[in-house]
Image 1 (cartoon, rainbow over the protein chains, first blue to last red):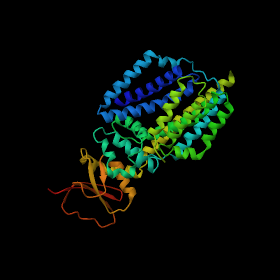
Image 2: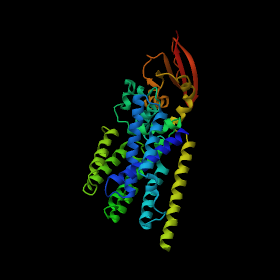
Image 3: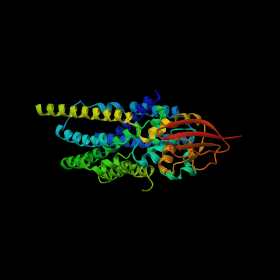
Image 4: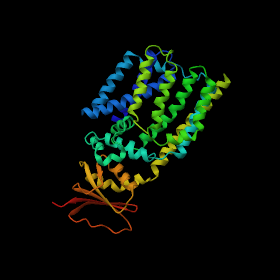
Length: 270
Length: 125
């Protein structure tokens, strides 16, 4: 029950983020707004989860709060209608096919090479921190001197986001960080594609996406389940929007500022 | 129109392939025992005893950082301290090496997985 509510709250927040971005930032296409809305929601969920721990607020209260926000944007921004108002029609089937082939390449790499717990850093740093954060009573133990090897100074966006779902599920399953790593590794080439396609550079967009799908270095690092790919995504979005600053209108700079600043909540070195 | 229809069918077929592939991989991963899974199974009875603990000492025959890190990950949010300061100690004994006798401690729980034997000890009062 709680896990379904947590997932629905996250998905609705993504939808609300996408619709709010389209409303307040000019010249954003629907796909790039959805991708950015998702990333902004990941950031908001992780920050709010960490705040509830720090302030001693129970998890159910966070869910009620998120539900309130989601009801508000569904009602005020008509966010659900805003995202589902198009008919199920593939406008550019050839390019959609290229996108899917590219994504399929990355997914196959995951299917063949993904380790359950990621690499050493993933489980001994990021997911270890997530395990602490998933326990509201004992999460501060992670800052003890015994865990100096796990870099307790590292920012907590990734661990907090994983802990949000682990708390909602009531146990720490490896599927959450694994699936999240896969989603992030798919969003990176999609952002490249849509950032270029929105500038009418569809050929380069297709080539860029295919380049990611054949680049084993990118895919290898993406399967780590570390924070590196997520950091690169935030930098990518920041640069992509900065290059289109004039088109984005007055609010574009706030979006760029938010994305750039949020990078510091992912990694502080390395 | 016909081309669009054909592409649409291919696209949906690819989507189905992606969903099937990812599901199969998840299923496969749940069937494989990784090192951490071995630790998780072996330490399950020990974790039951540490439900409200914050810190446990760590003694082992194994000089490996890997075993320590895997154990620390498995036991989190309980902190695994590399010294014998805390009242509760976890001793990981490796099959084939001489078992240590820790004087002044009572055995609280015992379990095993593969080559490891996990012994939870508590200081005598």
